[in-house]
Image (tube, rainbow, N blue to C red; front, side):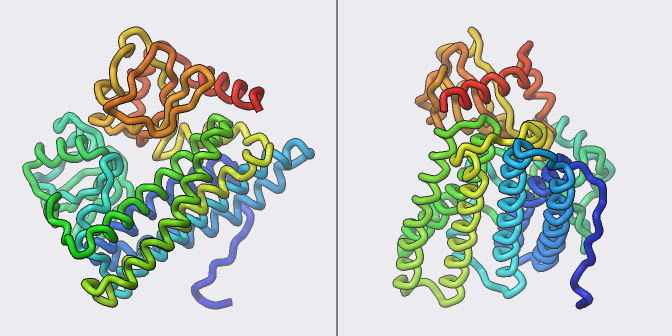
Length: 405
């Protein structure tokens, strides 16, 4: 056995905990990988590789534990969805490692792609802390915003996903993710600027189409994963088919972007390689999303444990029911984005509206919003739920969707 290999021994860890950690780590790795490439951060790229090895171990342990927990044909059918999501999380972690490898090899993506890669809902930024001895939680409270803490860098030391009690020191670099609005509330409060300022009108027209395709690629692959989790949580065929449609779109996009990159004379060989690497990794992520929903599309009922996994993970998916106070508002007017909450879909009676327009979609009483948020926002979600029981709402959706099929 080589020195790099790790001997894996069975440990009695609950399947829910193993799957939750795999989901958390794979999503974190994507963010860290992109950040490592944009800033040429080799140390952070190596951290991604360490996390990839951890995900491999978790999948092996989950396979052992799930095998021991299977006692009937019904158990086996439901366990298929567990295996599918675990395998997809591992595939996503592999894609993240491929992206991070670009930082190790000093391959840089086209500058304009680097500037525009962050979406409005998943905006990543780095800020330098100007004060000493303040906890992350206190900082967010004083700034009147909440974002997801990905990393704190202190000199050569890296703290991955520290909790809200973590004490910051002057000069620490805080890497955060959230909606565009929530991140900029924090930036304004700290009075800092990003390590690399973003000019939103500086796309080089020589290869603007390639940049736009790469940005669309990254965002679409991320949406595929989010919707795959929604489909499994709600047992919705409609949403699952939407995932397959989006993945098919990325297949076509990969061909178009590859051809465009090869033909673009303005790009250096290094930039071409970087752009292709991003495109291929993004396609692999979209493929992983389809892997998650395949059991559902084949009529296999998702395991009920998945509801708890999605509700307890770092990036959570849950439901909010609209009442009289919300009637007539657009999704934008609800103000969720400013709080760091993304609306993935709306269920109105037996109809689904996937990724509805925030400015055009008008809310009605009784609409069920499927939302994504990070764990620090749980108190905000509980406040928005008012007197509703999210478990009952999810269970009703699951039963209705399953009965309809």
